[in-house]
Length: 466
Image (cartoon, rainbow, N blue to C red; front, side, top):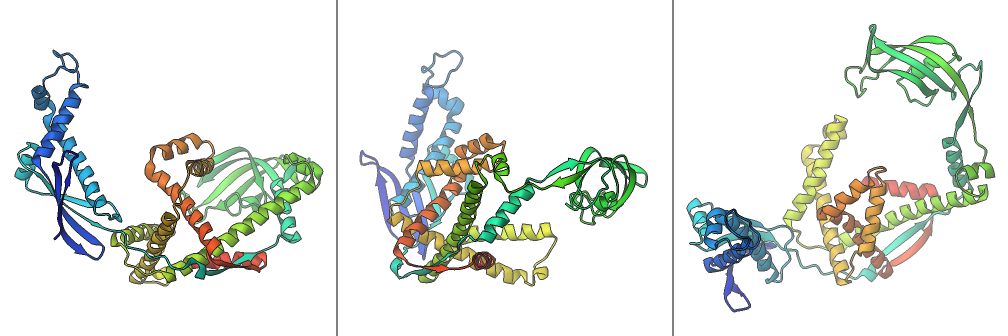
């Protein structure tokens, strides 16, 4: 087996590395760091510690080394050994010109007497490390890729639908004396709910607004308000659904003593300049332009997702190489956890989905392999093109993520700033999109006109197949 040494700038050996196993992507190394090197590092750490520690009876920086060793020796040696393990294990891989697929597994001897000798500086530090290396990836001819870019124009119907949704969200109500409650009206009520004559927690409300037909309350309650008018008092019986989140109420029928305080008729906003100005937009024409741009952006996003799926499918088929088992296993376990948690929350089994657990495992294993393979291919393309995610790009992504949590922006921002692993989650999709952009400049791209409906259907089909 290959054997080699790494030296200090003075020519003294730091460690000796022996390759004890090499099978496919798997490697195993034995690393020995001489006790003299450990002792030198320990002495340096003690000397540095002297300048920091303040002990009673000694001036700062004047505590004898022997006294520090007596009080803190084992603790300092523990830090030295951990630092040495981290440094030498990393250097052993780097100097072999290999890239570990995941964090190497480091095994120290289980012999307590031997470990004690290392801590006491009487024995060399010896350990084995096992890891997988990233495979050599030969990227295929990207100019051989051919994809269709689906383009859907924004039609008048889509613009009118978008405008109507805005008008509906701007629905207002006008209280009207003597109005009899009907579908679509807003009713202002006070109520007290009880089951078998006993009030239940959360069953009381004052000045509550109920829109008849909106489905904001349990089944039967809104129907019970129909035909009432301001000043009416009514007893309404309604049943909580079997799957109601509060289990103590699920499936039970409650009585609600209800007082109607006001009935408001719906007032539909008109698509005019006045309506646009209420939204902070100068005119209805400008509002239509903004709606058109928003829908076009949706189309572009769907088209981008579809063309990206085509590229990934072709990249997956064009590249075959051995996958690091550690990466595949990690990816599979993440997918499997999401799947099983989803089934538990839905109170379903694999049989309910028309699958067996063994079949599902194989299916998701293949998905994990695809993700790892594509991740390595994309990473290789990006590295060869020297692509990087800039700090500005990362900062913009972080701001967008923080905005997704109104009121908690600072907490989210601080979390990502203090967690490098979390920042990596933001960096990865940015890097991937940059690589996809590059591939599109190399591949043959043919534009194809489609309808909005076809674009949405295709995107849904892609998502179902993912």
